[in-house]
Image 1: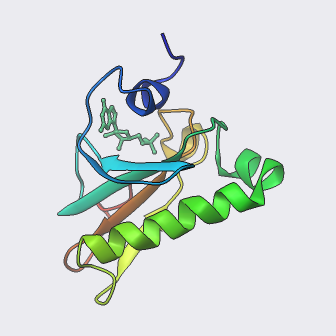
Image 2: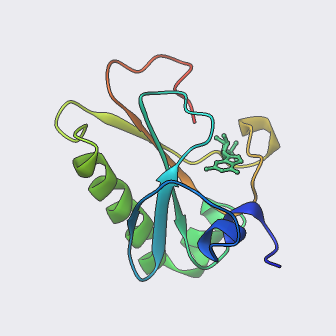
Length: 115
Ligand code: 5GP
């Protein structure tokens, strides 16, 4: 079995509502959405957080951000605006230690749309 929840989703060991995929990234809907669009983007290689990813593989971080932008387009929120959030560490509320970008949009975003 894979180690973290998101590795299990990447390996198709548990189901997720996948909205977009590339060779290096996967995008799927958050199970507990805090905005009408709330999609998580993960690299298929695991790093614990965005700082580790940035230091180890800037190209893969760019892939994550490009996938986030593509998801915003597919969801129809790219023009009006959206939020990309990387919760990093306990105080930020990070609960899954496989780096992921929250893509939030679909109407004016309040503080609840924090990812
Ligand atoms: P974090 O709090 O680490 O920034 O974000 C983790 C996110 O994963 C949360 O927004 C949470 O709702 C989401 N999540 C937790 N378990 C699952 C799951 O089994 N499937 C999906 N699609 N999302 C999940």
